[in-house]
Image (cartoon, rainbow, N blue to C red; front, side, top):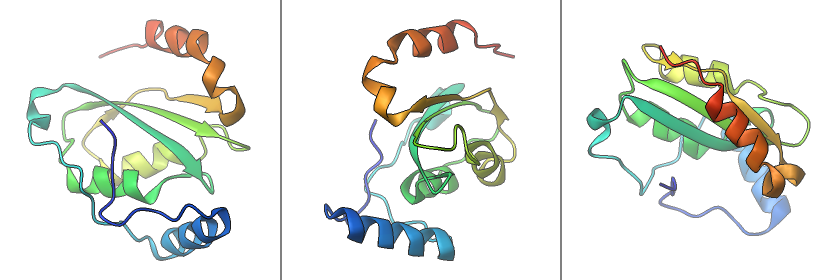
Length: 129
């Protein structure tokens, strides 16, 4: 499912960068249109996000903070430009302290359309508790 904010982000790149910088600085978590009512039915949750300034996006952090993932297994995956997994694991640990976090997958943004083999290798190599 796609995490959607109540207010969409701007299409203009410079405006988006400025908004993201302010949201990251203030630790703002935008209101979401997306909720998962049946999350209790899942043991394993895949969380994907592009990295903005080495962090999960504010909408993804907002999703994590508004859903109880205690006792869940979280498999993070990200796209990036310069930071690999950045601080995505730390973001998840802070927002979901009672979850088990698997090794994440980081895909260079420009390689995302051709990352199928990398994704399959990551999935096959998962060590589920």
